Image 1 (cartoon, rainbow, N blue to C red):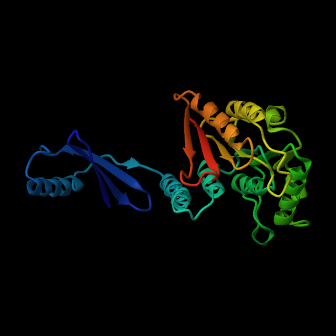
Image 2 (image 1 turned 135 degrees about the horizontal axis):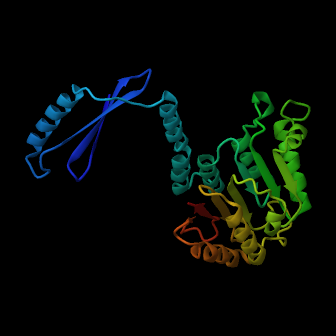
Image 3 (image 1 turned 30 degrees about the horizontal axis):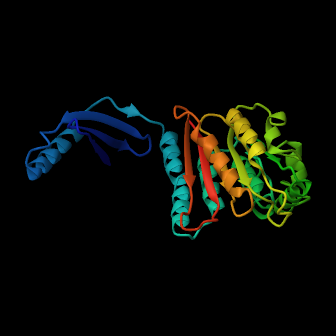
Length: 299
């Protein structure tokens, strides 16, 4: 198998796979005629040079097969994000699904994640599965390497999250919630997210920090997140997050104060330095009250 890469400098490098088992690659290079020449002549010369260089013996560059497989898996892991993005564009996927697909492409087993607004616990559960490999009881393999910090200012949200994890992972099983707590995979805190630095250990591997801003679904709509504490929480999150991590903020705006909170999030993101942050916003423009996804990626 040969792969050819052309550049405007008129040089082509050949990557020739000489052995599938050992994954030995041989590199050779040559120059093509001017790009302004006759196209048919260029194609003829290309094949002539290509066949010639396949026969040239050169010192092979040995690449371990594991590295090749790792690259393949990395490419495969990118697919869900593309699917979620297209689903979002077509109105077939929820904004939270798009957020989850981003997390999947950032998190690896053993990382630390933070759910800054536990709510009903679905994001906490999703993050747990991504960093630890925990699954439902009928399939189950749980690693003790990753961890999730969850917090909410409402005690009912912490209780609901705990019950969801308990129900999904199964009581009295090898991967039960109690066992997970013993190895400190999940830590839930009844605090405001602006205080996250008080409880999150400086592990150096916090890769995703998730926010859902608004009111608790199914709860009291008068109890909502507010711009002042949200801004403090975002500032704390930006300090905790490691390079290569992402702060994910889903902002619900239908309630009173929702638009003001969105403006606060946008202002914070807009003022982050471009040298170390890439900030994006995903919004449905012809649906006034559709939730907005803001992503802050730390370079």
